Amino acid sequence: MQYSRMISFCVMKLLCQTTRNESRYAKRFCGTLLSQTVQKGVFPPFWMAVPDPRKTNVLVFTQPFCTAEKSRKDPKRKAAFGSVGRRIPYRILHVINQDGESLGDMHRAEALRLMDEHDLKLVLLRENAEPPVYRLMTGQQIHEEKLKRAEKEKASSKTVLVQKELSFSSAIAKNDLETKIKQITHWIEKKYHVKVTIRQAKDSNTDTFTLFDQILETMSDKATYLSKPKAIKEGTSMCILRHISDKELKAHQKMEKQKNSTVKKDENEEPKSRSW
Image 1 (cartoon, rainbow, N blue to C red):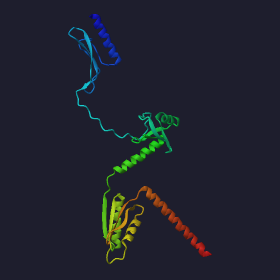
Image 2: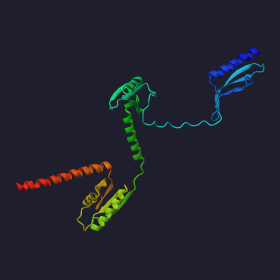
Image 3: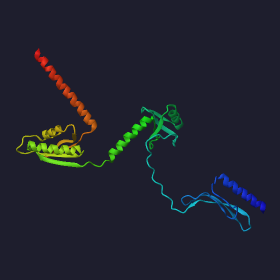
Image 4: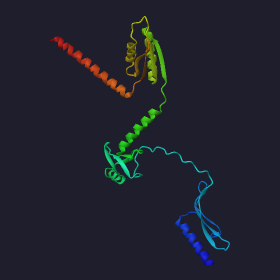
């Protein structure tokens, strides 16, 4: 009997070592738990020495259980754009090189070899494709693509711009028109969309579309058409103005510079032609 108990004790000790338990176990027999440290209310698997009625030790393996309600798994979030390293769960990939050219389908081992050989990084582009599409990119390319995506997300998350409205008749006096233009300019500088409606007066020969162009010309370095002038009903026309972007402003300034240089060139050539 004593020999049997010694064997049971040795087996229990061996099991503790093989499962790498860090728990304490002070007692040897009589149902003492040889368990791991309990974390967050979860009881991991453990061995128990349970004496039977005939005083022989029996090893019993108990299943883990948890006193807390099982936590619900959060839906899979879209992985952030960047290098996947060597963690590729797919066997066959469609690979695109750093220049955007397709290299066709290949085994992931071949894709990893190309990545290591050219000191590049693998980036997942389309996971739902068959096979999934990966691209070999440099660190600089990944950084630039992240900036582009961040700008797109920022632009899409912007709230709808407040739209201001202004209406008047085509018979408007010059001073009143200047006041209206100042008000439109003030709104445009705040990056509002401004809806301008002009009614054609019976006693006025001024064309409404000419007025629209005149208004825009006074603020050409600040605004442009979001919606070009159009007739919405008989005798009434409208347009929507928006703030000009930095890219559009540079293009406008470049065009104005070229226009001014052409005018100066023509003015310089005109006296020469007269001298002849």
